[in-house]
Amino acid sequence: MLPKEGRIKELLRQQGLDGAIVSSPENFHYVIGFGGHQHTVSRQPGFSVAVVSAREDVPTQLTTMDFEVPTFEKKSAGRFIVRKYDTWVGLKTWDEVANGAIIPPPAVMESSFDILKKMVREMDLADKKLGLEMAYLPVLCYNDITGAFPEAKFQDISDLFVFARSVKTPEEIEMFRTLCKAADEGFTAVSKIAKIGVTEQELVRTFRETVIATGKAAPSSWSMFSTGESGSRLTIPGDGVIRRGDVVKFDAGVNAEFDFYTTDTSRSWVMEGADPALYKLKDRLYEGQRRMIAAAKPGVPICDLYHAAYDYVKEMFPAYVRGHQGHSISMGPATCEAPIINASTTRPLEAGMILAMEVPCYIQGVQGFNIEDMVLITEDGCEVLTPNTPHYL
Image (cartoon, rainbow, N blue to C red):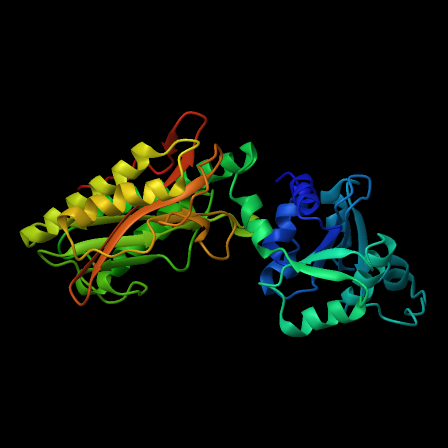
């Protein structure tokens, strides 16, 4: 992926900040264009860190473990300054291994925090206004950073990254097309086997195997495939079996693995013999979602999408209560990001936004519904990125 460093520099300047310390794996990837391996695996702050100046003429500096520095240098291609910190890996030279050369170890093992302090000072940010991801950093790390720079002023920029990620670049849009196509294939395969007598385990296994076979994505571990009563509660697939009159519901996604991007899509299929009220509810939820999609285009306030779906469903089912009808989605780890499709979000839609537009309804102890598609806002309207999986069997 291409770095989005320029976008973050621009937003830092808009907020009157001189720079930022980027600590989370997903936002490190967003800024730099790739992720650190152990940083991604462990999600521990400090395994990889980026320091970004708001000034265009000051290059971004990165630090990572000595074992990973050659990878960072290769992927950076000279764009960033890469600094190593010392680790337990104990890298050796060929001369030491093959010829028995003795090279004294460094007198002091420098940690990632040692290097972070050097980077901030070298970039003339030690007494400036700095952004931190306070929603990610543990308290002890936050205390270490703020204690190391007592003259600096710190501001939470967690929402700055969410805002930046809410409008996708053309490259990100193509990433989502690839992911959604893989998800669509998995869901369509599930639609072909969904019938009375099939188990929840068979549904999820079909989805996972189909997605993996595409070679383009990995199934999200949280993916929920349920039937009957299990669809009315938050749960992963269990021992349920599709029965006559059930609603078969899934709420599932796929991931781009080390590129972080993720999807979120749902379907609900009413099996034969169901109570007529369930068919009526399904139709209304689906029609509400279609109304929301039809209304989506640049300039429309996001709250209008909420009312397009919510008001329509509530007109027929007065008991219907729902705080939001979807959300933005990008790199995770959460699937739900701002802007949220609710009654209070007045931000206008922009071309390049990708929203999960959903109209759920859960009936306690009985059945569950969710109707959800990934939708790209285009220059003159919108495009459903998960169009092939049927809403009706």
